[in-house]
Length: 93
Image 1: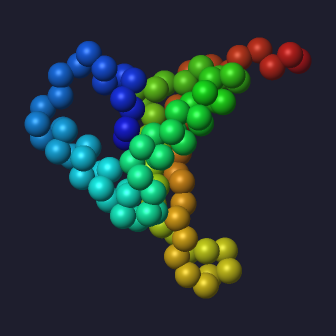
Image 2: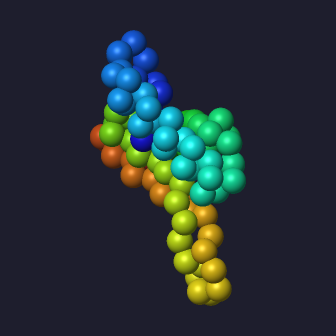
Image 3: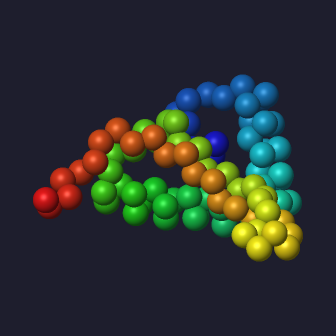
């Protein structure tokens, strides 16, 4: 969704830019966090996963949404990540 790394150097249409901005606004509204905060979280997740796996960042999709709590007492924010794995690094086994 917000894969800035793979988009560097690639021109995006104004439609794509507007769509990206709308997504940022919606995410901010849903979780009451800034888009910069979400990007920091995403960057940290990518760093940790890279220690163990090679991932396809161009197909990476991390988003913030809402879900019903386990207790069923309301709606809570949820971080959803779809991270395609290219390969697992040597785990020392």
